[in-house]
Amino acid sequence: MLSVKEDQPRGVVDRSGLARVAEHRRYLPPDELTGLVEHFWSVQWRLSSSEHHEQMVLPHPSVHLVLESGTGRLVGVKTRRFVRRLSGIGAVFGIKFYPGAFHALLPVSQSRLTNHEFMLDRIPVCEWSQPLANLARTGEAECMVANITPLLAPYARQLEQDANITLARKLVDAIRQHPEIGQVNSLARFAGVGARTLQRLFRDYVGVSPKWVIKRYRMHEALARAELGESVDWGQLAQDLGYHDQAHFIRDFYECIGTTPARFRHSLS
Figure 1 (cartoon, rainbow, N blue to C red):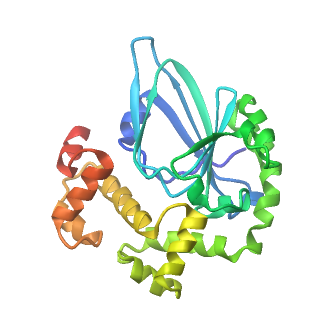
Figure 2 (cartoon, rainbow, N blue to C red):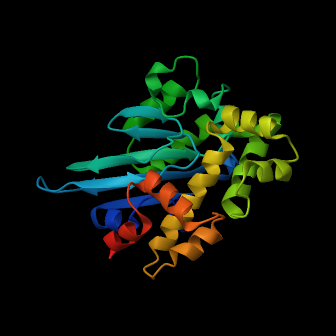
């Protein structure tokens, strides 16, 4: 029996809107995938011929493997929001890797994957790509996890062979958990390395810059606060997230979401 991940997903914009039209679930990985897979996820929907739903997502600094309609895709970190249109009947199953961890499966600079998608059956150099592509037809989540686990477990056991994978995850976690780390230099001091070394680490193991990760987790927190159903003091929130002033916060929010914080909050009511 799979264990469902109970905390609220970050980055899914207007979670209540998605819940009205689809079932979104996340599943904790088995112990064999500790440190490699953050969670598995699935979305299933059944809409009438006259219905459709456009779902916005503000992605994490994570690589995903996505299995849908008999095909498999490797999805690198996406630096901008994306919108998926749901219509008819459909289902998609995904594997979300910890930031930096996918380097164990594909030991190249992860920046080469950023903002790109690759069909799994067209990645011939990887032992895992074709077997995972074949699993896109197996269906139920429990069956998927049971078949995926033995394919990925050897890579989880290799994580400790590359200290940079552990360091990359540790630093991304620090950014997420400590809003006061609002500058790259602050993160470099926390890591005990120079800023240029930090930039190379994030480029090669995470796929995006530390500055991007800092901004993205700020936006995830802002969205979570906006969706609580309570009034929001945007000036105080900007301060809580480490912004020097409210104007810079509003600018970043608009750049990421496509609207101002106040208008986004109003759209949820």
